[in-house]
Length: 497
Image 1: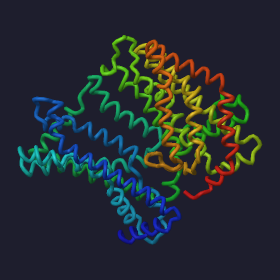
Image 2 (image 1 turned 180 degrees about the vertical axis):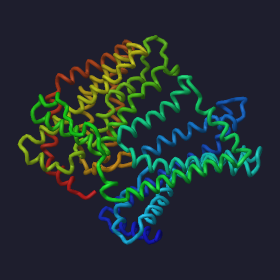
Image 3 (image 1 turned 30 degrees about the horizontal axis):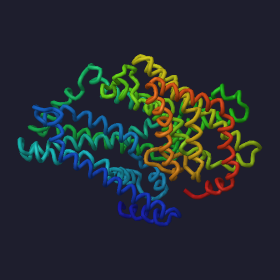
Image 4 (image 1 turned 90 degrees about the vertical axis):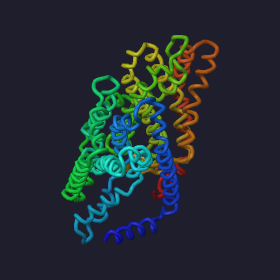
């Protein structure tokens, strides 16, 4: 039955009208996966030397055991955002005369065949053969490496259950944030060292098979938990039921003052809350608000002048105050590809749609700016930085990003996830990163060299204010582009994904 289902999946892919496009994308993604796995394998050979450089005079194995927990925390995070669920395949098989338990077993096994399942093996196998094998023999290699692999695979089964149970809900978001803060924040703040708490488990795995057997039991339990959940909920109305998202029908009252454009901005907001891909962008915007913690108090970026505004902070400020707008505007019209004809047929529909998106971008960027105000505790210069970057985002960069995104927009399925999903993305959507990086520095650097960092930051804000004053003619440029190409855009949106 397993090979029969594999054959059916192959025929489904080959007979698809988008087979050539999917094949090209799969070959590219396969090449990228092989390249990344080769880097991981190379890092495994260099792991001992890296540890010796970073922790000179200490036993590399002791150091690694005390930091293994942070590898699993990182794995928890990237599995949460990258790991895919087998729900779509399950839906296509439920009507067949095959037992649900057999279908779930097959799909769970297929989900395990992934590059993510090889990362721990490729990273720690060379180290275990070189270091663990020399000190503890083959038994130590098997039990120590086996404990690491089983922990990684336990996360695989757990994440399949966790994402289907809590994905895109407030509980899921709070849980992921709690894992991140407790795992890394506890050590950074000096509360407790999570690595030292877990270190005895991996130390014991070098001498005894007990940790290996205990983790094997946990892994089996995670698989059973995942299996039972999918079997019990293997009904179309359960697995495809929309998440009960709070505020899904709530409008932003401020937008209602702007007529039809404001109503469409409210409609766009509801679209963001209701659909998986746009909701993922909203969640990522919340995560990236913490981006400044990496840079602002890092001694590496301290300045001699004492202003505290290193040139790299310009990018950080633009990123923090405009992250949602920068991501969402990449596929500016693709979000509306399924109903774009409605706006063409409506009087002033195109103009109102685009102005509504402008309102939404300004509103979300303003919220990001307000959320970044606590960075003022690091110094008032960061409040000035974020204010000027916010003004530059909505006065200048917003128009430029939208201009690039309007070059041959492509259709997009809103119900698919955002990670490794490139629907709606073309060459222009990738090239727009260039002005996003260059434009702020094209204004900042000349003023910085003539005066100082603070003057360069203020120049960004002034240019942004000028852009806000000229908002109507600047936005009209993009509106006219859509009006002139509306039938070509509509035709491209009718293409099958």
